[in-house]
Length: 279
Image 1 (tube, rainbow, N blue to C red):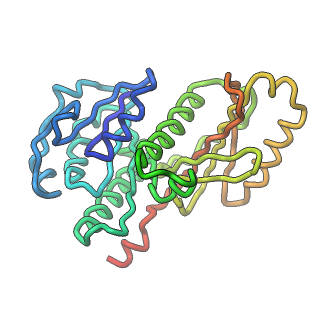
Image 2: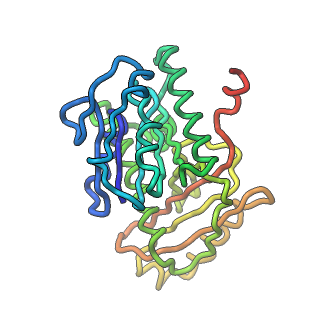
């Protein structure tokens, strides 16, 4: 899979995938330490108007490509131009929603525009999947995070989660009942389930959820010896389902001693509908 980060936040999260051999990482920014450096512009609008052609440097077609960006930086004005240049690939996107508490009105407006447009892109099928992640929610899920390396910790949590879900999605489960999400449910978020406590920690407060999938990673010894494991998992998954929510799961054999579970929620609803009504 190709991972493309646009802007500082996007590049930092894209870089967190670099430790996994399954990904080719490309970081695009106006700073010289990026893999692909583009000219710095003064505004969101100027990046959109003057975003360069990168087809010679991003020469892939019919590939799985994941773009990562955040709408707070002015460089995100070129995001739609970048998506247009990559449209011959299978596109997914991770959108980082920042803490907007201290952002200016202009920054908040541009972030809202980018986030809403991307959701409409996903709903129309131009993106196969849009993962929304909120830094505030990630921090709450992780717990106390020190100032030094703060964003590194958050980025690694997202990268590890999405990587393991990608691995499981291309693996055969030991047991499971996977149900394909509805075709229109292209807006999603990631989460982690504490199996022992039965606590779910999600990376975005997604509304209008229609589908949830749990990916359990269990070591071989527990799969062979723990006679209560299947019932524990099955009972938990059943308890999450209702008439409006499809819930499914898969159990995968791992070499790790610790049990873990990653999960995805899917929705077809634009998440900022209240903001749109207000506008």
